[in-house]
Length: 270
Ligand code: MF3
Ligand code: CO
Ligand code: CO
Image 1: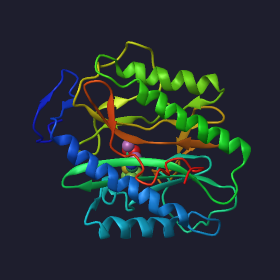
Image 2: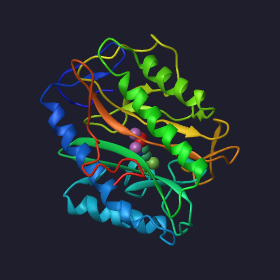
Image 3: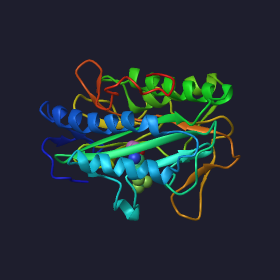
Image 4: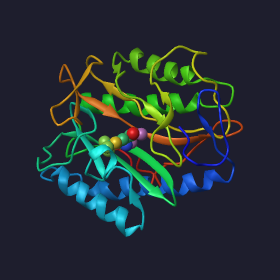
C-alpha cells in the first residue's frame, strides 16, 4: 500500500520512516496518551461509556486534532470502550459501569497527518484480585514484546515474547486481532502478531513504526464478533484485557510514542 509518505518500503511492504518523522509520531502519540490520562478520573461506577466517549471527542477537538476512528469503516465514535469480556472494538453506549467492571479505552488521533494509537485498562470502583492479575499480566506482556524490539530481531520474536509470558501465567493470547504498522496511515503492513516463534517473520529495521496491542483472556483465546459487526467478545465469556502502545524502531531498541505524560498507564498507578 503506498500512502504517499517519504522513504522506502521493505520487501514485506513495511515503510521505513526517516529520523525527522519520529517527532511527528511523538506529538500524535503524546496527545492520545494525554487523553487517556485525562479520562481516568471519569471512569467510575454509574458512568456510561457514551459519556466517556463524548468527553474524548471533546478533548480531541479542543486539541485541534482529528479522531482516526470517527468515519473509519463506518465506525462513529472517537474511542473503543471494551468492558469485561469484550476483547476489543466495544462501541460506546448508554450502559453504565458497575463497581468492579474493568475496561479498555482505545483512542487514535491524527496530528499533522501522523497517527497516535494507544489503549489501556481502567477499573470502575474496586478491582478484584483476578482482574488485577489479568491486567498485570497483560501489561507486562506488552512490555515483554517491547523489550524484543531492536533492529535484527524479528516480528516473531515479539510474538514469542508475549505468548510465552502470557501462557506461563496460564492465560491465553487472542489470535483473531493483531497490532499493525502505522504512521501517515492508521493500519499498514505488517500484521503484528502477539504469538509466534523466535526468528520468524519480517526482520525489524530502524524506522519501522507499528503498534503492539496484546489482548489476553483469563479463559480460552477464541472470540466472536456480535451482530453490531464491531464488538468482539470472548466465546467462553471469560474476562479479557488489552494494552496498546505505538512505537518506532531506533538504532538500538525503540521509542514509545504513547507513553503516559502523567505516568498513569497502569490503572493502579497515579
Ligand atoms: N484503535 C484500534 C486499533 O488499535 C482500531 C479501532 S478501529 C475502530 O487498531 F473503528 F473500531 F475504531
Ligand atoms: Co492499534
Ligand atoms: Co488502538
